[in-house]
Length: 172
Length: 176
Image (cartoon, rainbow over all chains, first blue to last red; front, top):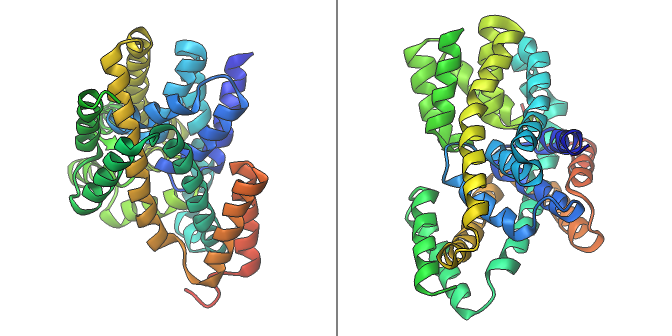
């Protein structure tokens, strides 16, 4: 039953991807390895589409992945799976709000998770680099983009549109 | 409750990228326009959103919905914030699968994948500054990286392991 499986797998992503946004990506790479739902290079496309369409990145990614795996119903199952842990946990702790984030144990756990999440995203970045940086031209384009993004803080959409044009011009 | 739905639908529709990109719009709609929360409360929601599982903006929506109308409100606000994404992305996914053979589209996406790698690098530099502090931070980082690289440990197990290590190393000892 693909819908249940999508719900279950994305529930796990929602439960363990702490910190939002890009943190979901390494979990999705695990899914790409485990299931025939989407490939690693489709995942890279998904990231770009999610960044340039409205809405939270994680939700967009779940919808896209779910749709690829099982159509509209797949999209609904994956997205609900992803937001379910949030819904449940926030409803549970909404009463003791401040106490939760000030709790020393919570703080300790978080300071452990943060460096690990960076390692996870590095590996996800390496996977995408393997797919996209295949020759000297792409490496050079990467270097130029990396520097521009760092020093001219424009919205990601701006860079994504330019990158698409560059891709067509250079016939990448 | 209709207003709650419309507001969060709007927030879902007009924010790109999520997370911090959403903050100005949330302030505008929730604090200034509807006075459903104060600026401080919103910042609290954000900091809790970062230390609880899930998508930050979904967490904020659940919070405010629950605060106003209880569990039904929480559910409704969450539904509203994810609706625009679900509709738009499903449409794009449907259209893309039709046109993915197009040569120009393929080349465009090859270019886009390069910039995605660059965007991730940029995020990593920012995260590194905030996330890796003290020798304990380096230890966990190196352990996690080698765990993924050499042992191919899944992301979930890495996160569980890192939380346990964080507790044991007691990273915030002495901090308030």
